Length: 360
Image 1 (spheres, one colour):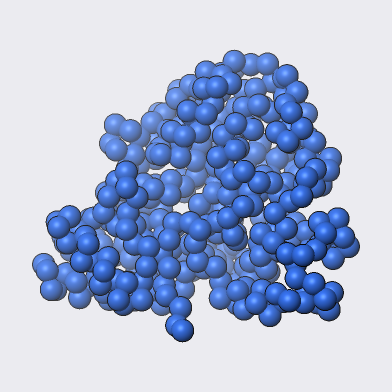
Image 2 (image 1 turned 90 degrees about the horizontal axis):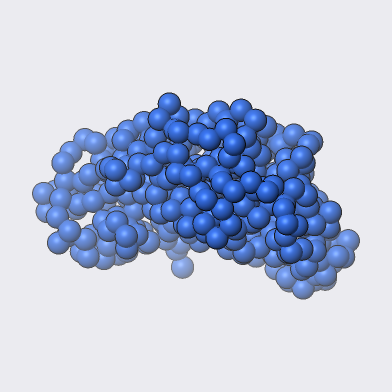
């Protein structure tokens, strides 16, 4: 059976070499006689898997020594609550940048704990751009500043890092983490759900600066306290062991692809092929301001929504799935994460060209 080109926004495509290695090791991980799914999370076999995964992630992102890496659960959505619980430090407000659906969800959850100040928003133009920092109305007394690096639904990406001085910068990097080099030292917290560029659903990665641990006022319950998770090496309870194992294989694969500089070069090439085609005609339209277009998620509409169903049906017949846009915006969306091969982009563009000739 041949594999399809999977343009899903998440859970998303994984590197084929990773899947093959996982299949080979399914029944017996390196002579242990066990599948990774059967291992005790406190046994020496799994401890070595987790330690290697963290070491490789630290190498890929050049994570400084004064940052902890946590392997947690609950998705990025749980971080919408853990961030204010741990960082408010007795303050009553935090700054948020609103650039789309995931930013809105983070702001909604923050309201349970504080007053979220929306310091900049692109809602005036239907979330089709990233507000320049010169437009942000920051509060120097805010507990932290939160933004979403890449809006999966709207296809807007920050291609720059905000400057926030002494106020901790918090970033939801779920859909573009590991797609390019990042200066981790500019952030207080980076968090990301794994199911887009890292591995299977169920794992959430948090990278947190040491001085932000143990600052929750009042102290959060143990499962919501970054400090407790750090003290227990992410094993306060049973972690998502198999997801951590697959993530570790993805980290190895990324190192073999030239690290984050190498994968960024490929992501630029892939996205350019698709955006250049979209811009060349009038049958397809991408609404995002060019300088803010995502390299990971490319939404587009057809000349008429009447063609949508036929487009999706034809794409599936041509070996491409999950191109339907999010229900909140409609149209189409091609998610082209690290693991999407360039052949998938070329196949999509060829199909789109043929469809336009037929219906244009």
